[in-house]
Length: 143
Length: 425
Image (cartoon, rainbow over all chains, first blue to last red):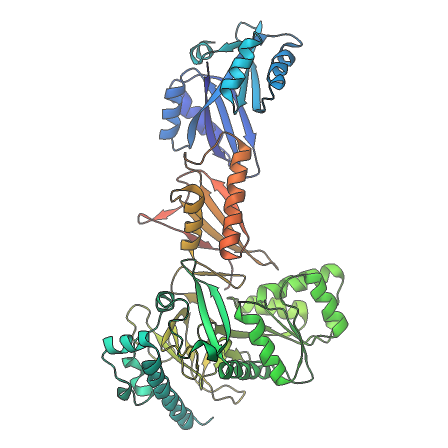
């Protein structure tokens, strides 16, 4: 039930993000969600896309350092308290979240939160036991 | 000394040195035999070209003591500097060598105008590095009052300089600028201090930097040259004319050769500096290739000294960098990176010197998929670890910067490893 995130190493210089966007556009890849973690010298761009394999290939060819990262995508109702409930399930098992980011689905009534957790297996079982809806890679790509 | 007499002395000392290493150092005996030279073949300086060169590789091969010409009970001091393969370059001194060293350093100090009334603040590092103790013994022989402050703790240096009335400062040129800068911040008026001379060396510097130091510290900045393989500081020194460095050539015989052919270059032309440490007892090196580029200056010096002068070192024959007095080889950094990453990454060393600052080394490392992580903390830990390992291996702090692959310049298929932005012009 793990989903795939595309992670890209980006130096902090102008135009690099544009090059990522163009490489993906040329490959016909649609971006669902993204987040950028930055330091003084560089950043790590994290992408959820509809075609992860093609995205990875296109970015590698464009000369970027890119990897696929296993993440957990949880679909939840787009209303107050939904995230709190999910995070509680992880905290109860002592699972540490490295980072997370969220996006609202196209239908508008639900949100998807992407979690990066070192113990992904443990997290998935905790979430499923708690009744959270964990999306498969296919489900996430289809959103 | 009158030139004819000097030449006689040098010839005699060269003969003795060749005979000594032939008799006492099996490695040299084999080297001489391979070159087809018997000690009897060397009548004097005119035959020096027949002798084989000694290189850093010879020192590495005989690590640590294989080139010593005396038994260890006669060695009273060991110094070492970092080498290319993680091994040190080890040098040894007999009691007589320590005296010789003190004498050539005393000449250096006197050349700079120092005498027994001076208070010498010695901010070269004390330790395995030859700078600190080399200056120290020379200054004591002159009869000056030596303050062994060693390097660092700049505010304390300035406090001592003011309170003890230091008249001579010995340190690297870049550290002299740091002292000037920190002094300014502390509100020190150098024009009011008794400090009058700086004896500066152990790293390349320029005429511009000399003027800057002289203006900031209100001193005469004197250039000195040396390398541990030959003796340490004291190989050559500027007099107050500041027109090239007089070589202590009664002990260290200089040659300038073409680095490619090994043949001597025409008089006055640039080439690789080669020294024969004729009088050294523990480590008498024959025709040691310094890899430093310089030339011998023609004509006499107005100061009246007859020892020939060499120009300030203008470059290196290889990629070696001298940063804050530490020898840095790209291969050392490469080793560290291989150790950390498991494979050879592409990297670039950028050396810079901020205005009035120390030399700074930045190591740019391309992030390969093997070490890339989607977690910034892991990437930060990677660069921290590289920095830590570099400091551990080289004794030098470096800024580590992760960069995208294929961004580092390559020339002719071979990666360019070093960018030296220090303006030594």
